[in-house]
Amino acid sequence: MDMLERIEQAAQAISKLGEPEVAVVLGSGLSEVLPLEGVRSLSFGEVPGFPVPTVAGHAGRVEVGKIGAREVLVQRGRIHYYEGYDLSEVVIPVRAYALLGVKSLVITNASGGIAAGLHPGDLVLISDHINMLGANPLRGPNLERLGPRFPDMTQAYDPKLRAHAREVAARLGIELKEGVYLATMGPSYETPAEIRAFQRLGADLVGMSTVPEVIAARHAGLRVLGLSCVTNYAAGLAGEPLSHEEVIETTRRKAAELSKLLTALVPQL
Ligand code: HPA
Image (tube, rainbow, N blue to C red; front, side, top):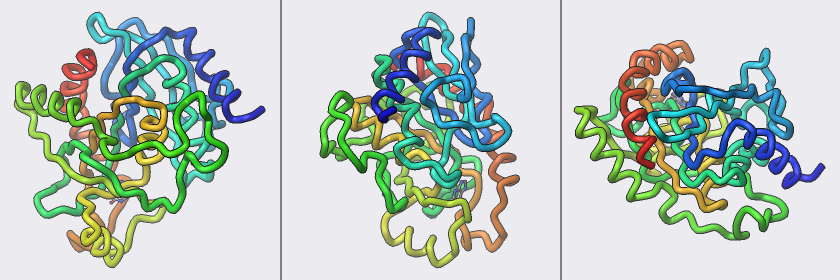
């Protein structure tokens, strides 16, 4: 089966849950935020065409349900490049949502803070990204049905959606910072020398996800809002070793606040 058929199959299966116009991808430690009402769901393993989960069927779940009057798709958990998939597989979910008729994508992640002024627990609007994966999910034959061969990336993170997010956050008394996200392949964390290099390149945040999905989303014409939870100081900045436990612990601490922000924001997108 070719890639377009896989994506079409996935979209077809998800369309049985509903036909939402907004989708939210929830990353590491954040997968339980944003509860929906009247939920219908499929595990990744149940969506034909989706990449097969590597670890104990825990790759994720796609839910469709309501926040107030608005129908929303929520993807709980995601697939990472470091798990061994091709980038073209990592972006199957987002491309399926595009075929389903989704127009706006909210994408969340956990990140290490590089910029001075960023601290663990900060919520940051992603203003732009730097792709240090050494690969691009659009490599290979272009899927004309989804978008153009050479998609523009000058406003990858929609300025209007960002302005809207800032307004909603201010109304709720939630502090939102803003910064450039740099994606590495992982799964090892960065070295202090890499972090110093990334700092000079203009990165404020570092993580192992998001960039492939955003490239695929922009290719398909979706508007993107990116939200990052800083879970730790990037390598070498605090003099402490990095741990996945710290990442998960910080996201858990911020889950309620992020859920409140998303619940107010998402139905208006
Ligand atoms: N580096 C890469 N990915 C991450 C980090 C980090 O410091 N924190 C959370 N995800």
